[in-house]
Length: 438
Ligand code: AMP
Ligand code: MG
Image (cartoon, rainbow, N blue to C red; front, side, top):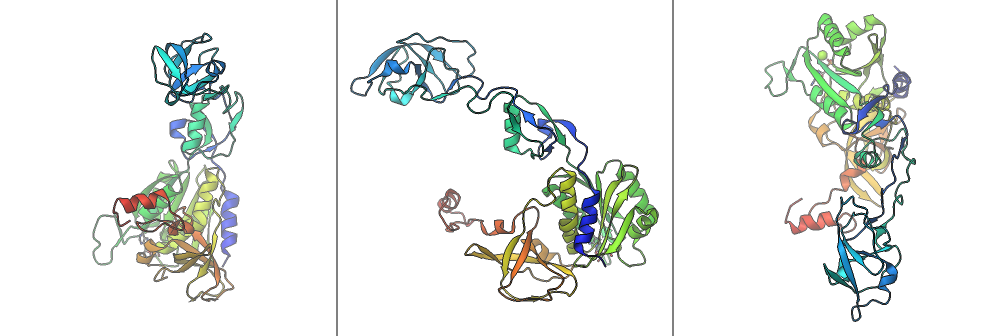
């Protein structure tokens, strides 16, 4: 038997970020930048108005007040998108809209609320300070400045910035394409009612969804027979469209465990018993000329999910150019004691019960058998109990990993009507006002 750390280390020593490619920004969401992005422009690109109002000379408004306004002629309108280079004459004004270029010679904008709103002549009710309500060219971003560093993951805000500074594409690490292959003679496709001896392939949808939650591209092949030639053929077929392959089933000690049988022969995939519960039988290696990483997970649903979270997810993040672990586990307190197997790392499904004095409290999520799907769906996280601990006592601190890319603590911050999670916030107030039960 090998330790969890050893198996994970071997995986992480093998997988590499995918080669960078140039992608249009619209197709780069979730990708990691492989180059520094420099601004091609200044932001804003021109002095523009921050308000709807009047562009003028601050000195022309000196002493203006509601009781003795300053009257100025309005020479015209400047709207956002107006590309004419207007010029302000001293003692005059332009009516200007938010985002419109400030005319040359103007040094302030007076908001329309501080005027009578005049179109031909305007009465200004407040004196303006020099520069008031003008967004100066380059005050946000300077031309040539690095705005996004290599290694940054492109989310909505980063894509906005890249676009705003003049880029339509970027050199990125592409999203890994994962193919999930479910093996087992007993498997039937989701959507069918199993007959005697049959089992719905629930691992396929689960693992593909887990991969997508992680931010990679996933597809799946279901119901591959426990037959070495069939398994070999399917894997060969998938190699051309996969950056990684994840199989489930067929890696135990059974007489029909075809995945293990066929991949053991190749010599590039190694099978181990890993000192963990659930998830003991594990295989990992590379396949084909392109050395595509292949993860062979056990078929029991809980085992396959735990294996995915513990081994596959960190590897896929690395292939995507990200850190293998992006969120640190949290330390929680056990509500109640439970036994843990000796000499194995236990990954116990837990639910968060409360969040008192900044610490999460958790309890086991129902049955812990590796075949149990019902309580798996309820779980918020995986408590990690080290090999040398055989008994967790009530009140003990335990490490908890999030599931589906969430933080275990996320699960206590769900506000329902009447509940304000520590302090009032607009969401809870709106739910209460809407009369929703949450
Ligand atoms: P195996 O790892 O092939 O020995 O399978 C272990 C257990 O997991 C058996 O009870 C299988 O029926 C079940 N199992 C295997 N593959 C799947 C799957 N794709 N979906 C749901 N259960 C599965
Ligand atoms: Mg099987």
